[in-house]
Image (cartoon, rainbow, N blue to C red):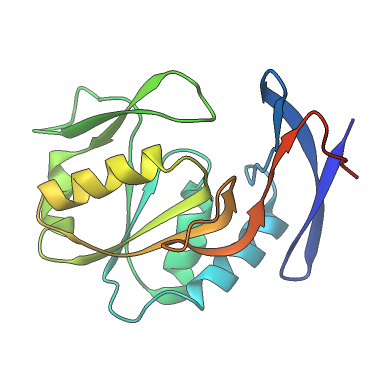
Length: 182
């Protein structure tokens, strides 16, 4: 299997390169179950969190452990944007997004109980990888709709096009069939 080597602080990983569309592949980054990577990335991003941020927002699932580490390191609370509406949610705020990783529509849901934690506050979005920006855009819409102010976007990696608005620890290229991969 082809791989792409990344460095996160002192931690090195060889990411599998997987095809996501005919002729196009990505280096698959998944922190779930890798506490060494999660800790290294979370501590590095916590050090780059702007001082004015009051609350973190993260989509479930893959970036949840990252947000937890950043929260622990900075003392800032975090809110999880769910990908399904739950029966216990009161007046949820819902957006639909097509993520590059799923390739199909999915929901982003802010529980109404969390709206006051966002309203009037400066918010940082925390994600593992920012690629097309679809999830990022939908999260920003939710933050704006409930009266929060987006102050920063933190991610372990950007992917594909460089994204200047994202504070990231590295960049993952898109691989075409003709690209050489280590």
